[in-house]
Image (cartoon, rainbow, N blue to C red; front, side, top):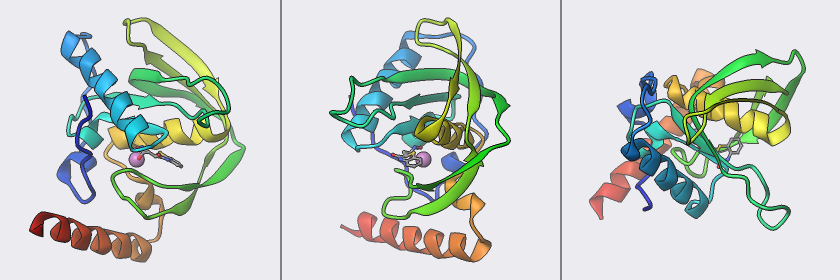
Length: 172
Ligand code: GNR
Ligand code: NI
């Protein structure tokens, strides 16, 4: 089932999310709902706080539609184990900050450890868009948004526009 996406500014997007200790049926359902919500948006990643749940869970699939079979990944308690010195700059967006985009520089390669949907520990090295996306999602779990990498002025401009968008959306 699709879930509504929380829009910036919102205290749930600024919260440090709590680790998962037991994989319940509810948590697995949440992960499946997040993938459905992400594909529907469409987006390449989604973090639990974006659907209002402040738990350390992210989902992602950075395969371009029609280029290869989809690769939905569900990660509980994802952690950056190692990061390359080499950096990469991508124009980032966020489903919680629609219609705003900006360049963000991050490590080009990261090794991530996580717990999968069945409760098994996994680890893998990601590069390219996958590396950017997984770091963007883990930031969400620490209450951090891509606009936090911008100058205060740019961030304030985007936040004010989002406040206006939210006001307009609640008035109808
Ligand atoms: O759909 C998304 N696209 C994207 C593009 C560049 C860098 C990061 C992302 S993640 C974003 C979905 C989202 O908001 N995830 O939290
Ligand atoms: Ni995001």
